[in-house]
Length: 403
Image (cartoon, rainbow, N blue to C red; front, side, top):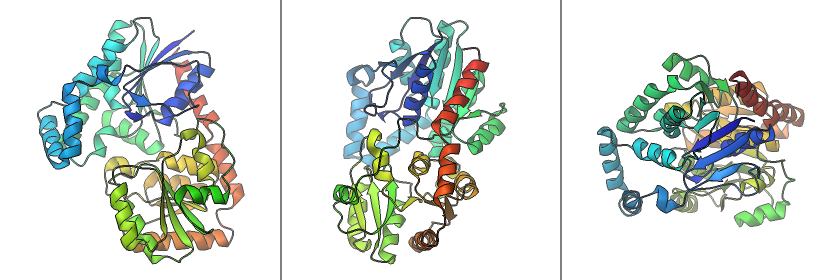
């Protein structure tokens, strides 16, 4: 039986891609161990056969990390300046993270070390030295160095990726654009693409309209536009909120999630949202699609200029909308255009202004009213991106590697 050690540095909440891949490998008969920094695992989603090793926070985060957390809360500007300086001096977190994984990895034999995202890759390569014959799989969830606007952070992570990626036995990533970028940038064979389709359980039935509205503190039924995910900077959420001050009274935005931008967005909604913007707390992954399926339209408003990683992204919410059968209104980014328009499940637009977003939403609403983005197209897209097919791609890779 093949034994797999997965490494995750995903603090906060374990990415559902990790859960789906661990489940698929366990279901195939492989013995899977997930070693992670302290994080939340989506409830009732992880296969009980997957062993989880997650040392308590005190073992993973020393006094320096706690000081950084305090500084981030109390003086975010100073924190960012000091962080940039440290990265510029080469004093990033990779030594600490590698030490964490090496100290906490079980001593038994593993045939595969599967590193989720770049921060875990150096540790996977170091563990390979302990495990003669083991294979290393680098699972690039994103273009990690190119998600930062700070050039010092980009240079730090680029050096690490350039030094490590060609030493992996195989590279996996999330879409064709990222596969092409990684192959061209580092002179690799084209990585295996495993899309981030919804792989953590069956799609539950939608909530009742009343239960959905109650979650957001909303009133009567309206045309429901849903944004779900983190309320974080760099996602064009300010323009999204402003756009709804320019739309009809019965077109409303529901923001499902939380994050550091929430207080500012609430203030902005009260000032410029026209009373059409509603906030609902994050819900467990196991019931998320019950909320998603209540939407008339799902929206992805990211801007191409944010960073290269965003320009080439296919975020989780894209596949959540597909799984729930919700039409999609998306920014005109390369992979979003390819998926949404090829399958005729929505449309893409320039969303760099509130008016642009308002026009996009109005256009999609008209098209839905005329029978566009029909249910047959949405069912076909759901079948095409179903997790069963994506899991097969992952298992085929493992079989090619002989593990």
